[in-house]
Image (tube, rainbow, N blue to C red):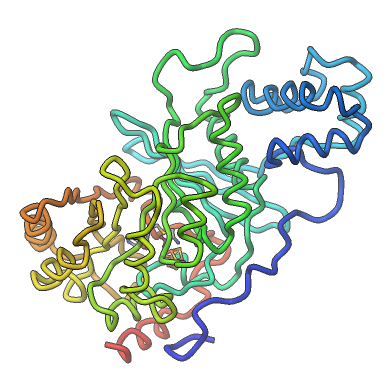
Length: 396
Ligand code: SAH
Ligand code: SF4
């Protein structure tokens, strides 16, 4: 089911939100969910708030994985927890460290599927690029993930778990009882939902996971330290503002519907004008909360001076910054990266119009960790490259 007339999405919304049966995983439950879980194993109503707070703190503040280590809980209660619940994270299959310090984890989740998580250290921050789905139902023609056929939504546990396993690897949990870890700069200070998948096609799980991560008594990352990137799932944009409140990035990538229809096929459902309307009314929009427009630079496709000028007019009235992403080529990709001169000329036009337009330096290229290259090795290149190239050619 590919090609211009194929549906641009498949129904992932009907996928189960939780893993199969077995002892219930406490990771990924919202505070209310955790409270309900504790009530269900006999915690009295009057103690529920306190017990929830205690368990929450062990899980997300100290990063403890063993009920027996939860020393402020009675032995009997710890035994009840052990009998009924697990504290389970996805399993790290491989860990690669690039020459620039970028770390890439290949992570196995229930069912044997694999997703990738990338940690990018920078001077003023450390950003974790988190995946929200195995593969992606959308088929953006320049994106490696989009060529992967198999798709399933990650559970909230699997999303929170990515943050927790990165903190494990970075050694970032405070020693129980020794302080809150708020003292110094954090190694993992920011999250971008820019790994595999379209986060807004897995809205509830992404929302719950981010609310766990933002909770002040746990991992406590502020909502301005989280950026959700969407290809433009318009109906979920307002909900993102209301129910998550994080920063928003949008994979814009083209300045005419004709070109965007090919690059980001969801544009056939919600076109540029509809998308911009949704962004304009994104309730959080303000000078301090600019929307990031991601724009991948593809040689001869979307990188002309005329494109830059059109982009400037489209952005009119929206507090925005533009991230220019030099295309990360992957084997068989039907596009080439624009030249550095072209990217700079494009950036200059945007800057002269008053838009910050940093050119994103690809990170972790030696370990295939850069944007849009994420894809599990086992599922690589299921859709034939020739076919993608032919589709692109046909729609030019
Ligand atoms: N599905 C979401 C988030 C994941 S993709 C979305 O599309 O926004 C994160 C960013 O990487 C998006 O802007 C995406 O368009 C971009 N990207 C995908 N493939 C790329 C590639 N090969 N080179 C550069 N950027 C790419
Ligand atoms: Fe999916 Fe985003 Fe890749 Fe498009 S760019 S195929 S929405 S992951």
